[in-house]
Image 1 (cartoon, one colour):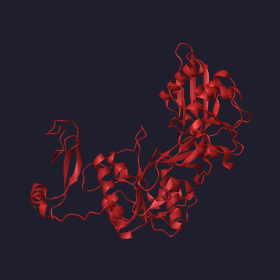
Image 2 (cartoon, rainbow, N blue to C red):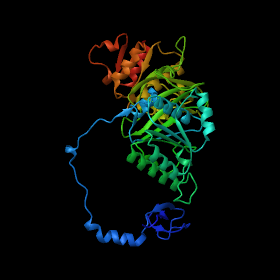
Image 3 (cartoon, rainbow, N blue to C red):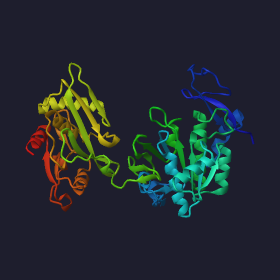
Image 4 (spheres, helix red, strand yellow):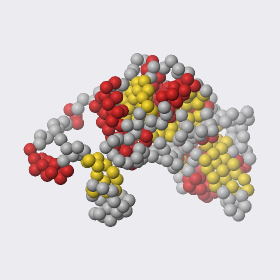
Length: 461
């Protein structure tokens, strides 16, 4: 059998060449040749395949209605917030890619999860390519896991890792990190596009063949995206991003892709001396503790996956001179400019000569338009120097015509606010409950259709 060989393929036209060239000989594009592995046999094998392709047996076809859909067995990791992001736990043969800034706590979280799974009787393996075994042991002692029986392997060669996975057959394995792994079949350096793509593909095939759940740790670029080829995210089953400020003790783990569960689920952790601890009530993180209501503060209910969370929106309006600034943290800056224009045109609140600063407390990022109403009320409160009532919440999308549009799953947002003791809510009319419900006990709801109604309602409170 012929040995696999290295070829260079153009990412633009798909042409191949046996050696690297600065310019593609087919389409004349520069720096588009990427190293990859081609199966042995070359042109002769291609001619053979083409000649006898008609004699090959086809795969059996099954109608979709005849396929039996069974529930996927999940194994909880023992960390509730991580299980929430994963959709309930790890899946046999599933491949998870987790990325985040350096020092955010990826290795700490996965070491804690492996230890919890090992204590349940599962076979675990931690492959470290960036640290020695002694460094991993030192971290385990800091986390209070000095008696852990998790198997550790310090290796970066793909072939040795695959051989170990085949021999030991762990039920879950962590590769920390995929950018450090290299294959002897390629001549490029570890971390290159070709190495990351080929190593991830081989590990994914090994996971499906052996049933081992594999977690790949990925580096991120300075822009915050996962380093390496985009196909890396397409190959795996689940993509998690570990977010948070290294100067804060709170961390968010967010599911961007999940073939076995809902996307945009988040888990909230607090970094302690003994590692990461799950936060069962994350709303407390994103709400500032004011003894009395203050001007420029409005609480909204946002949705992160299936979880409603209360977040405080703060606004500061101050005289800005001829060139006023518009700055937002955790919210879309362009949308802030649009909301200010709507506020002026339809509610008569002018901020043309004012600096406007808006912040989502706790470092959370809000991308849904349901924050519009809370942002506008916070800006108006700061401009007039009049605080909103105590126990007040608001949510709803505001259109360019001044209408207040409903937010998805508004009933769940209101139930979460009532559960946490809020008493007054200004919401879109379509989100107001049609009948009385004990879940809304103690919460007075003011449904509105337009931004003018919301402003009038707040002035009357």
